[in-house]
Length: 396
Ligand SMILES: [Fe+2]
Image 1 (cartoon, protein in one colour):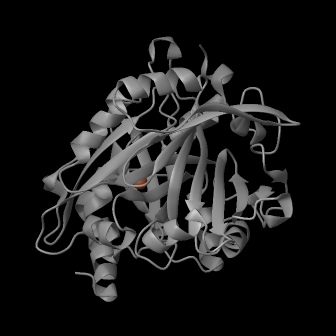
Image 2 (cartoon, rainbow, N blue to C red; image 1 turned 90 degrees about the vertical axis):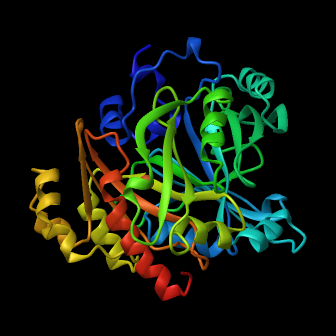
C-alpha cells in the first residue's frame, strides 16, 4: 500500500503529503495486513490541567494552535471543560474540572498538569483490543460505538504506564468536528502555524521497568524497536538514564521510554517521577519545518527554553560530528538550537522548560533532515542543562 493512501484525515486537512511527512516525522511504508495491532497514527493527546480555559488560551495565542471543538457545561458536560486544538496534523484535547468532584480534578491533584491519554487512530478497534487482551493488556474501556448526527465512532481504551491510557479510535464512519459530545468551536490562529505534526511522545517509567514497557509495546501493540539505544555511556557526572525507542509499523507513532539510572544525585527522571507521582509522559516532540522561525516567535511570546552552553557550539568534536547543516552555526547558537547527526542525516532540536508548575511535562521542537534519531548525541549537553535547572529548583 502506498503511503499516500494511508494519510490520516488530520494530515489531509493540514495539507500535508507523504513526502512532507517522511521528512517531518520519518513516515515509512508499512503493510498492515500482517500487523497484529495496526496503528494508523496519532489521534489526540489528551491533557488534564488545572485550568483548561487558560491553557487553551496559551496553546492558541503562544503555540499558534487553532481551537476546533469544545465540550463543557453549555453543551451538557457539567463535569469538565474540554478544548480541542490542532496545529497541522497534531491534535490536543485540554480538560479542566468544573465539578470539584470531577475525576479530572483528582488527576490534577495527584499529577499536576499532564497527559492522561495518548489516543491512537486504528482501522480496527476490536481486532486491536482482542490482540491486546490475549497478550495480557488491561482493557479499561471495552469496544463500543458512540454516535451523533455526524456519524459513529468505534472506540476502546487500554492501560499503559502509570495512569496513562491509549484510547483507540476508528473514526472512518464519522464526519463531525472531533467526537460525539463535542461541538465545533473555531478560533483563528495567531500568526503562522508553528508546528505541523507530532513526532514522538516520551514516557518516563519506573527504575528497572523500561524493558518491561518496551516488551509491552512489542507484544501487545506490535511496535518494533528503533535503533536508538541510550545506556549508561551518556551519563553525566551526576545523573543518567536508560532509553529505548519503540515505533508503530509506519513510524508515525514513536515512543522513546526512559528509566532512571543510579547516579550521584537525583536524575531528571527521578525528579519527574517524584513530582508527577509516578510514570507518565515526559515530553512531546512537535515537528516543525522551520525551527529557527518557530523558536523566534515562541521566544518573542515569552516561552523559555533550556539554555545551551556556548561551549556546545565551539566544541571542535561537535563541529566535526555535525558537519554541514542548513544555515550558519551562529544562527543555531543565538537561539540555543541543538544539532545531532547520524548515518541518515541530521536533526535540529530544542527543549522548553516545563509547561506547568511542576517540573514534569515539556515540549521539544524538532526539525528533521533525514535523521530518524532522537538526539542521542545531545543527551549529555542536555542533561547538564537540565541539572543546572534542577539545582536552581533545589531538587538534587
Ligand atoms: Fe525527544
